[in-house]
Image (cartoon, rainbow, N blue to C red; front, side, top):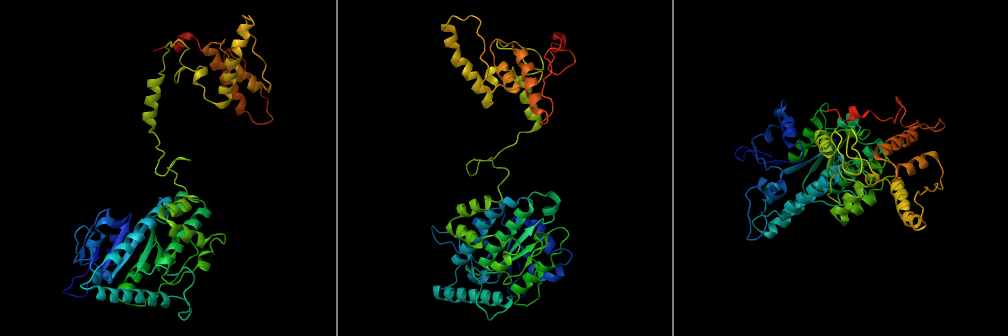
Length: 429
């Protein structure tokens, strides 16, 4: 937060919400700080939990008993809000928008003056000023506002900054269609609040953002040239956009559906967004909030060593392999293997009742060499090393290209896949 000194001139406040606040602040008041010197008199860091402390950026603050703190409405009227969204995690955009924009609205609507009547007059003045500035930036100020424009006029200027825009092309996290969808959603919600949208990157100067701040804080009409061709260089002044402009990037985009989800609830809006831009950290089918945590490679290898090791250990059901636990029928959890094993176990009592001491495994109906090898792998009459060899041949046959010979190598032949190692090598310490 940066505020001017009352002894010099009327105070102004710039509120930065979201990720990368410190970096953005340094950029705004860095080498070209003389251009925004009225904004650089003091600084207040509210931390990451600005939701609960946002009102304290606008002193004097009152806190009625049992109620949240209320900001000074006169100070709120001379403020601009910047909401930052980080392109390194575009799947978080919906959550960030649904968190910060309503929070700003609550602070503004809860702000106070000395009397309720005075508050009502000031709020109307703030909304009229927003409307005038919005119309001034449109192509024809005499025309009524387009559909979806400034539907939530809370009376304060807002800019949404899409930071690290250079990552759009550098990392290729999203497809081109997803990038278009993301920027269309942001612009649709921004239009509803009359907010400007700017893409920011290491190679993009912040001149347009500085110009916007000076325009809204000092009632200037500096020209900001709009650009909506590329998501990495978006420059959308407040009042310029419309649903028709937004659909230029992708005509199939449904602005009305986005607004309907936004109006329904934060959860509905986030679900709508996630249907097109899912969070890669959430496992498919998991409940909201469940994260797919990837194990560290070293930890995984350590756990694997604890389970199996590299030495032979008799467990009563078979030998351990060189890379993990023993491979027996109960450790195979593939559907086809489990099914074959279940069929064998089901048929075993019948064969025993018939007095067959040397049961002959029935030939599978499917009859392919791969399936036969799979059925052989689950036979209880084979030892565990034999199971390993047959399974190896089975999976090797699956890896062959279509049309190529699928004859598996003969298990036990020296120098061929599936051949057993001499026992001395397996017992080497």
